[in-house]
Amino acid sequence: MNPQNPLSCPLDFIAVNENKVRLIALHVFVLSIVILFQPHWITIGLLATDFFLRTFNVNKFSPFAISAAGITKVLALGFKPVDQGPKRFAAGVGLTFSLGMLVTYLAGYTTATLILTATITVFSFLESFLAFCAGCYVYTILIRVFKIAQSSKE
Image 1 (tube, rainbow, N blue to C red):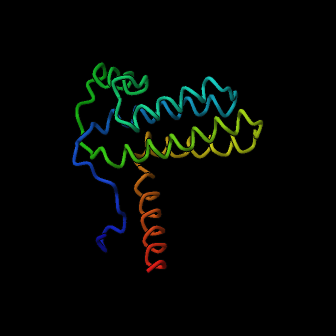
Image 2 (cartoon, rainbow, N blue to C red; image 1 turned 90 degrees about the horizontal axis):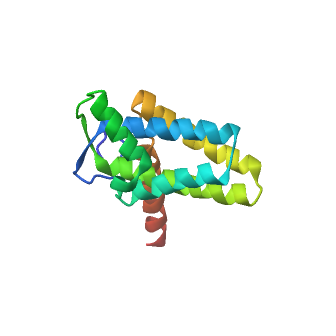
Image 3 (cartoon, rainbow, N blue to C red; image 1 turned 45 degrees about the horizontal axis):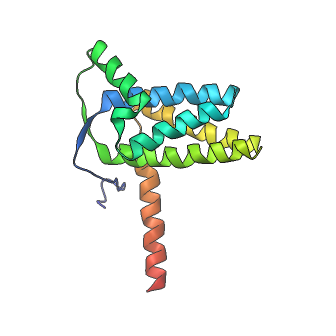
């Protein structure tokens, strides 16, 4: 970790198109808004499935990635390279949250479902509209927690 940049992001050294990533986040944002106002296991399941596909790098089957690729091409947004690592990590966080949403929804814990959905809504808004990836911040916190836990064992 370098003192000028206190963040520690997971890196894959594979470039992906930031324009496409931000459009995917817009899809997540819109679906999250729908879930906030009309939660249903099908829409939550769609969100979880899409996060699963993107987390495990099966983007060719991801409805959001397919749609974003088409929009990127139609609008001629071009390729703005960004490392894939933080985006896949963020998708994993999204998968965790959306699975939590599904479980809490099915268990009847409406408030918990809404809190998890609101969190995904905020994170997807930040990525889509401000190009701010919260994944690096979450990753940095996790790394610090694991380092502290590891050093306390020694």
